[in-house]
Length: 486
Image 1 (cartoon, rainbow, N blue to C red):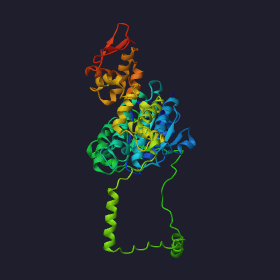
Image 2: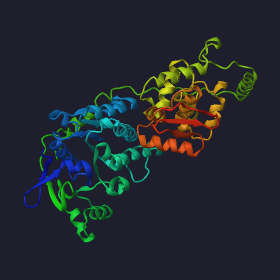
Image 3: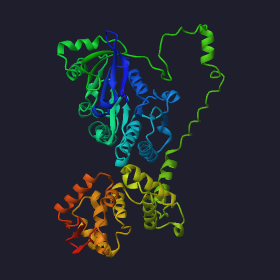
Image 4: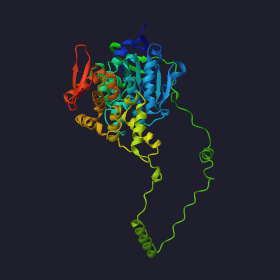
């Protein structure tokens, strides 16, 4: 199958092609000031390659949703779904190889970054059997991988930056090829930009951006002025998927267009000033003005002092604290906590959800059981949820005292896999396999599981034994017990 597509023409009118197969292995970075034609370039790339590869578009402005009118893309309006649903859709997209456009235009910037992080992580964490090739296009990438902190919270910024770094640095082995576009290279995190091997540089005016673009294109600094002179829709291309030497590209036409169209000059309305005033202020002048509240009557000083004295006396009297329910109807928090944790763990994918989403889900479940407030803070929930994943729902039970004491040397995020191993040793059951430990730890990566087991062994929490048949058993020195070989 021919994997070469035409994106435009060079200075001599000859066609300039992009090798999609090579692009999937080497990634793409597009840069240009607002109005330089970046979105038009991405649209041309998506249209030409629509029949060759699965496409996933992170669309912060809703510019690319019109592709669905002409091609087989599915539009996901992110504002209509929760974090959990977005993560589930990300996993299904990889499984079913659907081309989608994630429209983020109804969300504010912080919600856009959070949603993009959850979605990209779901693509990245898909099981190995779903690692099909996919072109992941991210417009306005400087929003999702900023080089410096901005107005959003550090937690959201780090999550978004981590997801973009995974896409560009580690996505290739998982079949994910990033094609990102940014208005300014200086605003894009360097470790994200540096992973691209193909570049299409459009018009830019700031010296720092021109210098970085020239460096990426292998041009001398005195040649960087050419980037400032580029016309709209003209780019300088370089990379193994485009050309081995910098080539000027005029991007070709597209079959679809953005919903807003192009902005041009329009004649002003010809209404007379008085008619315009009538249209602007219609029904405003006829509405009655709000009646101001009457000023309070002055209170005599002696009466005011007497009121204070009466208030002090009332404060000293014992008053029953208000409750949401009568005393006999107030539910015990512990059964509600256990029930909420059991319901959450009924979802086999719950271990792979973000911590913030899990805590929010826990809070909602507690309130549904008529608790006046959430009984656990985030730190307490993190520990209880880890123990619950290991099978311990009541840590106050004396039979778990020695096990929990042995777990004290490990971080909280390792509690779940350690508890699984320790419970298997106590019950004389076979050693949990890597899949079970991965679900407890919240990862599908076999390498991370191996590093987890190695770390716990170095800390002296466990001892790993393997027989000649390759069967593994794990001992817990502080308990003096070992799992069965598996």
